[in-house]
Image (cartoon, helix red, strand yellow):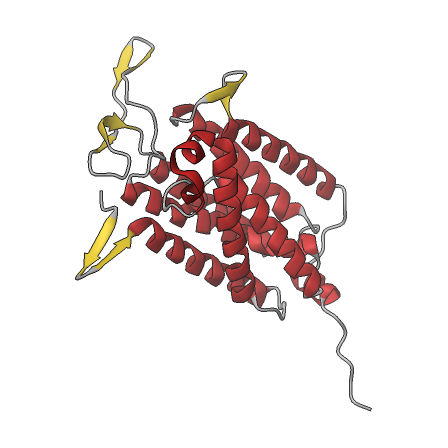
Length: 273
């Protein structure tokens, strides 16, 4: 594990470095989505504002979800390098994109459609920071699995030099989430380039990411709070249900060509007299 990169007197946290790289990747993907849809707006600026809002939301959600950290660290928990909750970042990031889409006259839901591939891929890249820093976002200890009389030994890793060290092999869940984020982002990118009703891509994003996070939580170390599920699983289930409902609703609406939808959302250009 490499929690920090040492350059002379500088100690650069790899989590922060990968968070920056995730924002760059998300900005690039969203800019390409805007260009393909012929949307004349500052995608990079939108991502930058959404990232800042997402970081604030992720910290606040983490403090609410894990009050023990706040009791131990006090207000320092809000700017500590560890402790980020994805759903807090998702909610605040969506709110920032909705506001910016409304201001840019693109449309709130249309903006979220365009941002969905970027959000999925950025999340996956950001998880590399969790893996490199060993911040505790890995899974439970590896145990042999028995099926049809056969015994399987899943592959795992120890994180002895991580920020939250563990010395026995555990499931490297950040790597699973990296793969899931990239696959989901690729799928949404393909769907975004085809005829679809406004909100369809957002629905697929909520459904797929919610389902992926719900499943991976079964091998995560997060405590169970209700019905044997963690807070993240409950939020994931809610997101997946909302996504499924949105997919069903948009399937009943007429699909529009992506470029045509972009033209309708763009404000008319006044010609000089």
